[in-house]
Length: 231
Image (cartoon, helix red, strand yellow):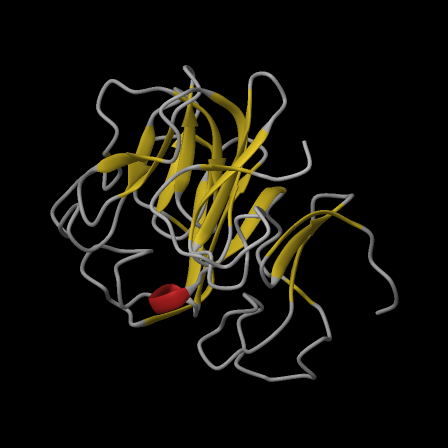
C-alpha cells in the first residue's frame, strides 16, 4: 500500500489526510474494522470499511484492547471489534462487531475513546456496561455533571475542564479530579504517570516514579505533584 501520511494516530489506528481510517496490529476480533479477521503482518495497515469520513479513531487499551471507536467529521461516534463491555450495544450482542457501527445515541462528539467521549456540548459522556441497558433510547450518559471540558485524551479517558482542572473516569458513573490543585493548560497521561503544563509554562508530573518518570532526578515514590527539574 506504500506510505500513507496520517494526520492523527491513536494507538493502532489513525486517520489519513483524506479522512480515511486505517488500522494495523491484531485482527482476531475485527480490530482492523475491515469486516474480516484476516491477520496480515502486524505493521501492515488496513483501510477501515464503511466509507466514513473520520475525524479520529482510538484503539482500546487494557480490558478494551480489542475494541476501536472513533468520530466522523460531523461528530457521529462509531465502534467495532469486541463488544463485551457494551461499546457498541448495551446488551453486548453481538459479541464481535465486524465494521464501524454507530453508537446508539443522538449525541455528537469532538473525540471519543472506547466507551467515553467529549461531546460537542463540552460534556463528558460514557456508555456501555454500567451506564445504560438495551432498553435505553440513548446510551450516552453524562458522567461529568455540570463540568465542561476543552480537551479529551482518548487513551486515558481523562479531560481538561474550562478552568484548567484534570478529571479522569473514576470507575463507573463519575469522574474525579487528579493532579495539581492549580490550573494547567495542557496535560498528557502515560503508563502510571501524568504531566501537565501550568499557566506559567512550568511542567509538573505526578504518579509512579519507579523509573524516574516524574523528572526530578530520582526514583523515589511520592504522592505529590512534582515540578520537573531543569526549568
